[in-house]
Length: 217
Length: 217
DNA sequence: ACGTCTGGATAGTGGCACTATCCAAGCATG
DNA sequence: CATGCTTGGATAGTGCCACTATCCAGACGT
Image (tube, rainbow over all chains, first blue to last red; front, side, top):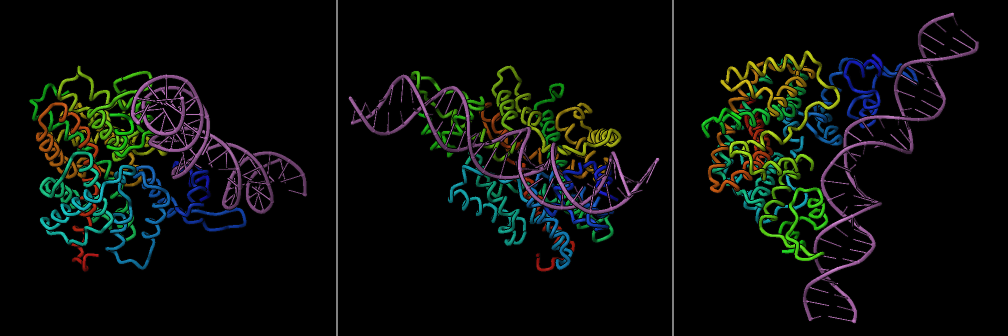
């Protein structure tokens, strides 16, 4: 198919597709001549994944390129490639300006370490990207007057464990390795809004329950 | 305290504070004279909350203004004010361009309704902001080739229920109503990165467990 | 009284995801 | 084979948005 058809079938404008090609988010099509190129289903799927990462996941173009490169990297083991999304996709980046103080960060690190220990998770997680993100966030929270220790984090960690189980269960429905890797990236990103929306609904529900449900708002 | 001190104690530049004053995110200080104004602890706390919403939560300035106005609104009931964060803070907005088709949205709505029924939650949630966000996200997921029915969503809803319980438990630690309202907004936003970071750690952990832990990456 | 600081107004910056415009080379139709 | 539309590629521009830099006149401090 040509650019125009790729655009029509994906709902992404040709200008944007050209942009993604330029940025290396989408591999170039098969060249038919000096000014013609042909795209196939793999381009369509990749394009959908790109849109998912950028638009739904809100991750920057440069990062998306890295993630996709890792997805395509043949040298990685399956576990590595499944972990790419987890490792490489950035968190919503807590605190850009009022960077937490060194003490806050150190304290946060201690508490996260304590949490890992109580969960029986390897201490190596502490230096992984999501581990660092957690430390930064906990430090930021402390700076804002909401200190969290391992005790307070534990219920959330238990919740996260069950979310991860659900994630992995879903992944197992995909058979081919390609699909699994892609789904791992897509679902890691795309389930975030699902989970957060559900949490807010559950908050409203729980609040109504505890305050005696005053006609539930 | 003066602007400079407010800036020093909050770590936010005077220019940015002026910007927030202009935008109505921060109430003006007590005027001492034509060119002098004084700020107090409430300004400091509000400023921290503003930073939390905008910087950590990534919500737009205009929305932050609405949320804060609702927080300050004396006419709302306690439950309403606690719900402000849940209701008014926008979700990461799925799908800006390739808007889901009408069929996808209708199907998503049906599945979310089925989910609410199975959970025993009021159907009114379907039209609440987080409910709508959920429908949009599920529709977007379907469009990307990851259809979700009530069955698949249920485990995530169970997870969300427990997260909400943890949230409300934490809120009860705050005594004054003011603190509770503010903490409700702050924690709704600030716990999102915590939860997401923990989910990624848990994914890595669960993946290692299922694939036989190859020295855990 | 004089240099510094203050708050307010206005315009500018930087980052980033696109998007509009050109252009020369196909392709398709009469 | 002429002609008009389309294609992919290159380049520069747009729009949004959260700041940020600059001015300015009026306090304030010593």
